[in-house]
Image 1 (cartoon, rainbow, N blue to C red):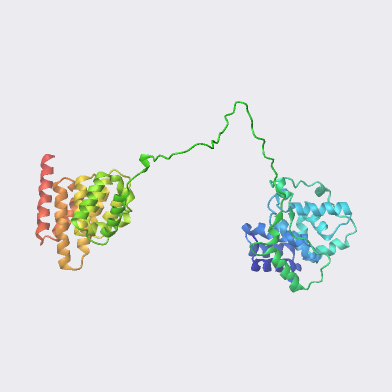
Image 2: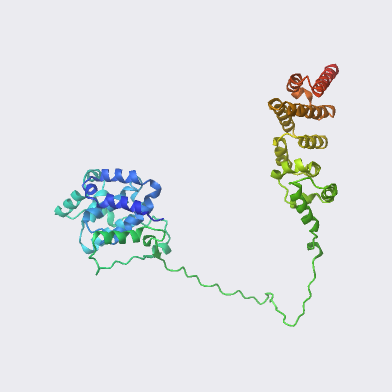
Length: 423
């Protein structure tokens, strides 16, 4: 990942501005860590490597000192040998040893890698360059000549690559704006040149063909005539499936004629697996219950042995209260064993809906429906009255003026009395 133009501007300000180069190294580090977090260090380092390897981009020694310091500072808390940019330091040391020419950069590297490196962090890049030029003795680089930078896990294939940037030694007459444009083209953008390398291809010889005198030979007869036979099991008549899928779409929008309802129920009874191929999902259940409750019930009954029943039942108990919904629930509870917590949740929802209904006429209608529904559950012993006795009794008292509620209250008392007598 390359730098953005904004990030490049921040880096260039840190390593080239007079204000920064006149600040000590500790202050430069603070400024750098303020603008860049640890996850961005590697891409910053790749850009700094590009600038340092092309001397015409950073001509001033102080600028190069600041760039080298950032490469060191980013991984200062770790061993120098695992710094991903340690190879650059090693190359500068080797070049200085071969040419017997020690630049301010080599002087700086010898200081920051020495045990007494703390003093140099209070110096500015300008002061370090001046100290290097004024020094009459060669920097002590004995501890760096044999520095082991081979601890990197980078493969030999990758390290054999060469950069794609070639310096133009004959064209160095560039003003600051032209130089900035070159730097932006090299280190910013999705396809930044600083991130690309020319890597030699990993050539692998094709293995020789295995030959064996006992090997079976593959023959391709040319004079044979072939006939094709259909596999009977692959020929499936999906006309019924397509027809039911079309009818289901209509069933979600309105009530189907009785003949079409019977057709769907009969086909599902013959082949229950059709349910999984006609596009039925839990989210479609409320519309199907309201428009064609008998079809919805048939589907739910055939899903009773499926692990999908829980999803459908969750949708059913949470849908808006209606006559069709309670009819489906009543039929379903009489023929399928469902978890008690779902039944209790639905009953509580029914009672709450009646209590919160604002329209008096609609409220009375729903109270009658709920009372009939609860009476059916109690008489058929689908629910244990003791679990909901207090809640249902309070509901009956609140709506005692309604005939069905009074009847439900009497039924509760009968069941409760019978239970006390049996105990």
